Every structure is written in C-alpha cells, then in structure tokens.
Length: 403
Image (cartoon, rainbow, N blue to C red; front, side, top):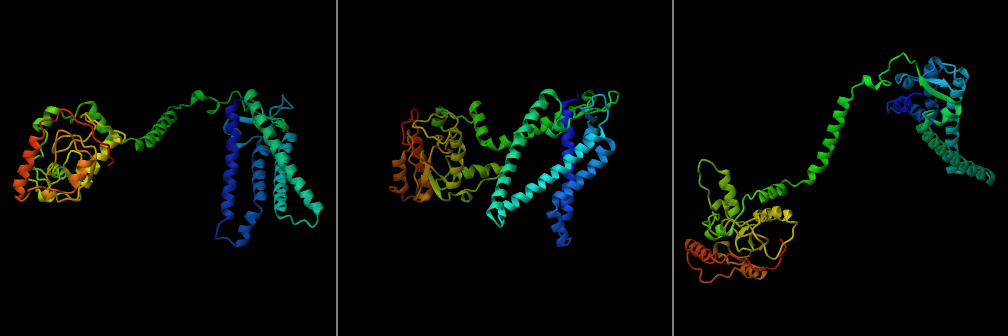
C-alpha cells in the first residue's frame, strides 16, 4: 500500500496543474485587446473551456499512459481494484473516468442553468416555477450529501490508505507504486535532506515572531528598568542635601535646565553653552517648584510614567524609576502651566514637594520686593533653595495630579 501522503500530494499536483492551465486560459480570453465578442465567449463558455482542458489532460495522461503527471512524480500509477492481478488500469476503467469527467461537466452546466432560471423566474406558468424551485432544492440536497460522503470517504482513507477521493472509491480506482525496483525521491525520504528546509522554517518562524513582538517593546522603558536594576543614575538623600548632583543650580530661572544639558552634551572641545539660546519657552512648573519648557518636561514625564503605569502615588521614594529634577534632585511627578514671568520667578522649594494648591499660588507669579536686578534675584533664589533643602529626609503626602 503506497504512502497516504504521496497519494494526497499526487492529487494536489493534478488539481494545481488544472487550475494553472484554466487561469492562463481565462487570462488569454479576458485580454482587453481582444474583441468584445471573444471576451464574452470566454466568460460565457468557461465550463466548456474547462472541459476541453480536462479532456486534453485525460488524453495525454490517463488514456495514453495510464497515469497522471502528479502520480508519475510520486512514483505511483492507477490500478484497477476489481482486477487485483492486473498491473495497469483497464480500458473499462478509463472509460469510467472519462464518463465521470463528462458527467461532472453536465452536472455543473445544469446547476448553473438552474440557478440562473431560479433567480430570474421567467417561467410562463406556476407549474414550471414550482418545478424549478423543486429542482433547486434537490440540487442543494445532493451537494450536501456529496460533501458528507466525501468527508466520510476521506476519514476512511486516513484509516486504511485506499481511495483518496469519493470518485475513486465509486469507480474502484486505486493507486499503487509503479515498480518496487524503481527508486523515487518522493517514495524514499531517506534520499532527501530536509536540513535546508528545516532551517528555513525555523528562521521564518523566528522572523515572524520578532516582527510581531518588537513593536510591543518600549526601548525607553527597557533602558529605565535596566538602570533601576543596576542602580544606575540613582540619587540618595545625602546627595540631595549637599547638592553634589545638582549641577544646574547655577542657571538662572529663565533658562531651561534640560535644554542647557542637551546643548552642553552636543558641544565639544570645551565650548561654552549660551544661556540666551536655552531660555524657557511655554513655561511649566513642576511639583518641586522649578520651571521647564513644556516640550522638555512632558517628554521626561512621559518616558518615566510609562514605566510606572502612569499611576502617581502619595509618597515617593527615590527608587530610580522617576525622573529627578536637574535643579534640586527631587522626583518630578507632575507639572502645570505657569503664567508668570520667568525672569521674576522665585522657586518655592521646601522639604516637602509642592502640591496642587501651592502650584496654583505659584502660577499667579506673585513676587514680593523683587526690584533688584536679575543677578541679585538669582542669588536670592539660590540662597533660598540652599536654606530650605536642609530638612529633605522625609516627604509629606501630596495630592495626585495628572500631567
């Protein structure tokens, strides 16, 4: 008994060959350069053209050689199950296969004509209309039963390996090896190396997996997680008190520390960064009481809030998962628009981070006795920061606020 896989492969090859030829023929008749009549002929007589192709393949394969192209590639041949001692298929079986091809065409043509008549319902009397409807129901029932029997036949074929199609079982046509002495690559898997195919399948699967998962991975979140695990860029209370990490405290309040830091990182050869080129645009005030550009602070908060799931807590310890202010080193959790003048802004920094009410009062830009020059104001603000940073050991609770 031949391999079931080889039999199914042979059927698939024959079906694909017929589909390929039929599609080429349809394209040839559907060419827009041809006359309209020829194009209509290809559409109207599509079933007849398919029948001609089937008859041509039948004549060149089964009738002449007793075999099909697909079976030949799999080292198989048709066999008459009614004559077990006969090697080749008999002419009676060939005529049976030919009649099955013609019968399939007649049934398809009848079904197509019946459906078109059923849709139009142009019959002159009620008797013919009822007959058309009855025949339509009968055809649908036959198709349903044929599908059920085909399924049952396929299950039986998987069990015993004989008659892969229902028509083969009806006509008692089976498949057998051409000769036990002939060697076929398909029937001898030992002669084939599937190493390249297996490697290709593995790489294709891996590529599809990466193409699906990589867009779901946030590189920024991954880097922040690694920094948190390995304690990179982690501030302590001691450094917050002595200000050793607050390298941008010297900047005037009208200068954005984030912009200044980016500019200093981009410069080389010890060049000086211009403060005038890094002034704050569209100022926003943070919960620690410092001003930044809207674009700069929002990008920082977005990067770190994604890591924390976008949830703000009442009391935050410096665990490395929040962005720390470049001026005071405190974790920045939220920010709000600032409507005052950046040149006259005095930061209100204390041991506790500012809540919403303090931010609202800071938005008004109320400044007392600010008549000195910008340099004197900056010196006063620096003294204010240093004096109010002594009690930074414990953070008090603050109200949550969205970015």
